[in-house]
Image 1: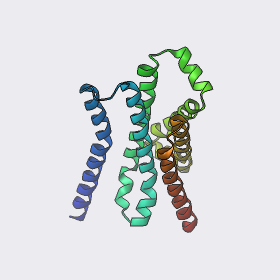
Image 2: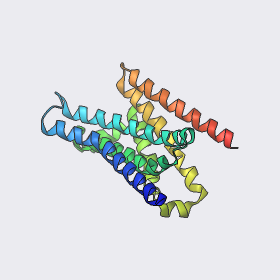
Image 3: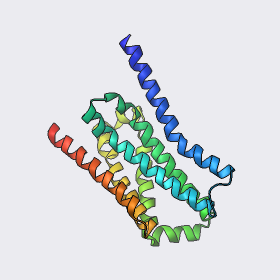
Image 4: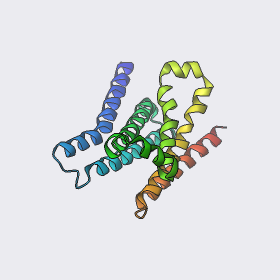
Length: 199
């Protein structure tokens, strides 16, 4: 009976996670079709996708510290889902930049990705997340063993690069990048403290 109840809780938690994670996309689709994105719709889409990416990735990093602080072990069941949604939104962010913003002008895109610091670090963050997304399955966890955990620590590097991309890109209004960076530092500190205590 306990097992059935636990399975039900896990299912409901995963369902709620999917709904919450897809809500930003649904909202942007609605704004697009109702023409409420503003004067520069592509720019709005590009920035909102970037915002949602960072929010979801920070939420992913918060799972382990929150689980250990609260004892809610069930939270670990949604960490993979959140991580993949973070990669999904970042991929959409990159797709919008390449297809809608730059209209597949590869010469300009390559110049942008090699000469503009915020574009370089953003692209690097996306590249780092690709192997993490690919190896997120149970099969890869078994195949890689302890190397899997080492590989997936790259998420901290990817998020740090994403925060730097955010900070450099906004130019003047740096409040939200600094808030996001503060959240990141707090999560990283909690993670390091918990690791130290466990040793």
